[in-house]
Length: 351
Image (cartoon, rainbow, N blue to C red):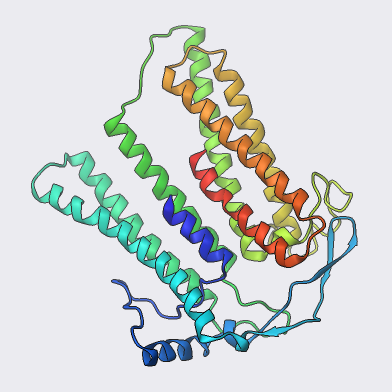
């Protein structure tokens, strides 16, 4: 969970592209002025330093719809000082080292337990699977960062950023890993409770279980769509809710060709899909909680349904407050709210 939070802070502070190299076992931080100067020079060879960064002052052509980003007030990334570079470098470094610490916290005990024969054959399979996923998560993190270091940003309006596809894959792997580790831990330490039910009650419980799985899948898809929103800065396109610029379906939702590209590359479509998925998740989790109150379920099942409903409504209320707060503020503050909104990812994991 903390890794998710540090990842969100890294994105909020736009620190992810400050480290332009990657080593499997970790990098030693610069210890002298000369080493810091060398690290800063490496950073200067990549697009985030070379290219212009727009001031992100936006204008709207109708209520809630982005018209353009004004090119006035352009600031050069070349103006970043060494001290400012150190701040974003340390942020990215902390995120990477925390990920490695997670790997070590898993690998070392697993090795000891395996060597002493304390793991059953099924647990050995889990350990191998989890270890592989942790390793792949680290590789995916660097593969994602590498996409923001490539020389593919040509236009003045281009903003160096990581690929939204790789960002979604990195987040998706994190969700899968977190879910599997939580499931395995609960399976061992807190086995599922059982209740004696028959007939129609058994049928209802089975349907409730399918609803719970549907909620889990929809929340996962909502989180992945949120990665595309973050990767494309799609949250800045429309700032009204529930309508988008006084329309339920915006007119530029299929602006790209072929049409399938819109799902992952058109900021309008990406934001629209995220809204629909978020609302669907809210409705499903609420329905699950209401239905759980009418069924004979184990106590922990009732507790889990209630906790899920509390989390999703807390997140929904918080995001609505953020939307209201961004309607009349400068975009620099809007970017802060956007970053806070991205911190909803840990909430989705808890849900």
